[in-house]
Image (tube, rainbow, N blue to C red; front, side, top):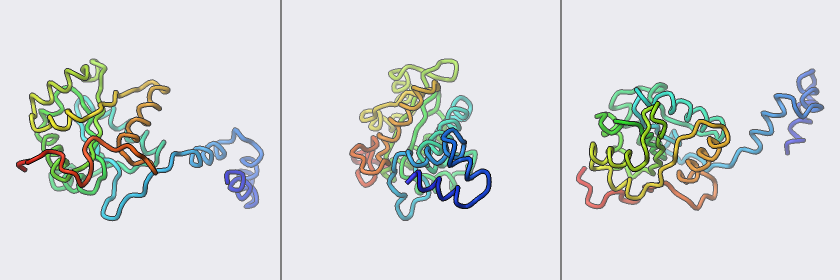
Length: 214
């Protein structure tokens, strides 16, 4: 398939297509190879617009989540709801959650002390979204150890305890080789890979919190 695409480019004429066909290191060849080797993901169901809703505290998690968004888009073709790209008022955020398959919570110090993040989590739990939890561990960027994150979040927002009781928390990584593994973990936990047997920590259609009061 790849050779066929490159041959078609060459057949179109012009220097770029022919150069790409003859040179395996050409940027166009690398782009085609990257797309061809991208893991297959399940299509977005009718009624949804995004794969992920990215929930975070802007003050100490905004830059990491922006990087994570770009990586998920580039490496897996994901569509992500991110507040900097959308309407961040209450109605816009609730709509974004309803139109997303997976709720990704990015843990930094104080994240669940934020009233808007608490609302986002409640909306996601009420809508029975899949949860994927990613934690910053670098203390220079608002990170804590996983146990500290869980204790702090449950203390600030006890309603989230059922999520943490089930969650397999993914460590946020910035080093290239470790970042690849992190993204793979996120995708596996999300259940979005085609033919994936794994799912997120709270699955769509299954009550995440028995006898939830909201």
